[in-house]
Image 1: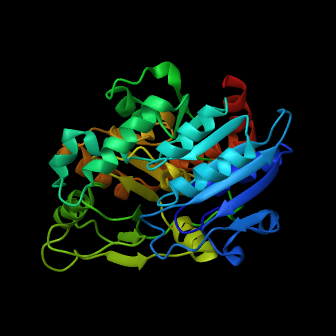
Image 2 (image 1 turned 120 degrees about the vertical axis):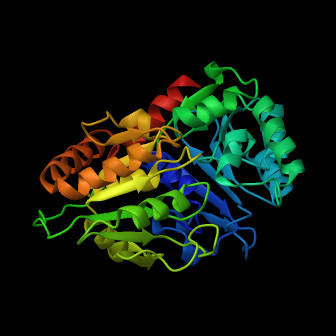
Amino acid sequence: MACHGNWHTLTIADGLRELGLEVHLITTLSKNQIPGFLRERAISIGYLHHASRVRSFAFRMRSMYRNPLCLAEFGMFDREVATRISLINPDICFLWTSMAVRSLISAKRQGAKTVLVQGNSTLNLFHERVMEAGATWEGVDRDWIKRQEAEYMVADIIQVESKYVAKGICTRGIPLSRIRVVPPHVSVPEFESKPLGDGAVFGTVQMSRRKGSHLLLAWWRDLAPPKCKLLLLGSFRKDETLCPGPFPHGVVIKGFLRGDEYWGALRSVDVAIFPTYDDGGPRALFECMAAGACPIVSERSAGPDHIKDGVNGFVIPIGENSQWKERIAWCANNPGEVRLIGARARQYVKEKLSIERYPFALKELLASI
């Protein structure tokens, strides 16, 4: 479930609702942007016009605990959320990084346990190897980094999406015992089997140098696999650092799609490629796998947590360009084997990472607090 990119919080709320918890939402979103099951309990504290950069949510729930649980995701409204938390007197607070210091302190003053929900890769801006992709410190708010580090020190538990992100947090001196890995769970729509086409369809979601898009386009230009297509899904900006000159032959720009259009595009993909330098968030990967695509991922991602090389996908080290090109060429020439690997990838997600199983993952998290 997504809303202005903040699908994390709403998915958590939905999972907690499935556990029988009453959810009360304090949000910067307007009520018509909130799912129906939460809408009647929402308290609006203003709408954010730059929600992709600034986030603000707070949730209130009642359960087996003496007092309500409080779940908060926010951005510029840290002080506002902290005030609301002080009025709720919760037992447990879930708070979204990266401006939660006041809210964390407010919750702990009341004796509440705190869980800091970490995004897919924001912490890994600290990793020097991101610079390999051409990323720079320009535009990075150093005060934001300091606030995030302060949050790690205050929170009781840090919830992350992958072992890759957990390792990144450990590099900041946080013990692994305070970190819980809860991968996102996704819908697994039912599809009819698609016939084998004349050529394989490759695809990738989101485009940036950090995600290795410039490498993928260079490999595609060199290989020029006959009768094959490369679908570019998601929002991105075309510039010379990603692709000097025109796009290579066979590249199809799909852009940002929603709902049935998005799943229809994913369903057409035979091979999903993620040559990322640094990305611990596996949602797009899981959605491609759920659609039956054979995934190829780098080791600097959540992929190794879930992909057994050669069984339900492939894991290739970033920087090994020849291996990536060889695997892409193999997939183009072996559609039958690719289809079998994609089917195993879909089955893995269906059995372990379907949205119906997410409440059980949250239940395990609550039991560990």
